[in-house]
Length: 345
Image (cartoon, rainbow, N blue to C red; front, side, top):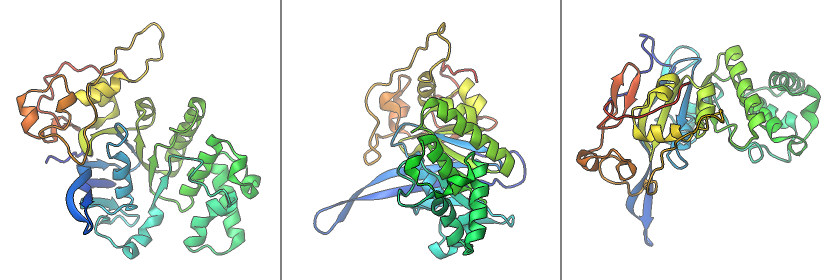
């Protein structure tokens, strides 16, 4: 399979995922005999340059969160490589490492969770929540932790005197800021944000997104941003990778993908983005049928049962991810010949 190389420079990417897979066995009977596999992530490849943001998008259940968790090694991948450029400029494959081998690298990779209500322990105050990573990673002095927690709270726009309060005293947006402060406690270089604004009001979403952009510029962070809202992705991401039933179907820089999509599934997602102009009418693309099960995907292209442009080859042969223009990769037999419409960024 062709591997997306979004970095034209000879320097290695900050993070490069090669042919990543994550399968879950389907067992049956008393002896738990394996009768099949759920292919949650199936041969996914992408790369991110340092200081940039890669967006992973797709419908619920497409495998984007599983991909992100495999990158962080919160889940053990079934196969593939996860090449990460460490702080000492060395490159290490995270996929085969044991928990002990991963421990020194954990402080360089952190996660912002989707649910700002469920991701914070209601029995811990802000000092304990934000300061816990510091305590676990060798800062036993309470005064030093208080100073660092106060600094982190100020960094995300919260007052240091809040550190003795508990999560129930804060709004959803404030709780997500607490989660961001916790993720930044150990000065990570890679931050995986798993739909960090999907549970927030629209006005609060904008504040949190602007905070993430400000922190990225100030701290030199690299983001892997998981989302299903393409209007959010357009605002924050430099590159976008679109997933469908565990597979990568298209990847390009944000402007190219929004203006000139080459995969019918990408075009259908873009047609659902609201246009903020009452004088313009959006004509959405309605997809027929249901999303296939990753335990029993259709033959050929996984998208062909719902695709208006499918031909015979789509039903029998799985398309390869191929480059149609510099930095633009598409997994479609008819890429480049379809009259697909995007939206102007």
